[in-house]
Image (cartoon, rainbow, N blue to C red):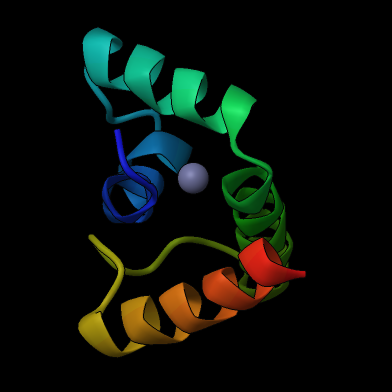
Length: 76
Ligand SMILES: [Zn+2]
């Protein structure tokens, strides 16, 4: 799984909607990727503030923002 795939699946992951095999791939990637771990923590914090996940998937504009933030985490 790539970081981009992970970002696409992250809302399903948080909702517990991933299949068992996707969930395993997701967590395997997470275990080896500091950037995605930071991303997930950030997203969880954001969602706590927002209250609940109101979208079915990450909208394209949000995805661009996240990918941008993500590159900065990676290079940090
Ligand atoms: Zn990653």
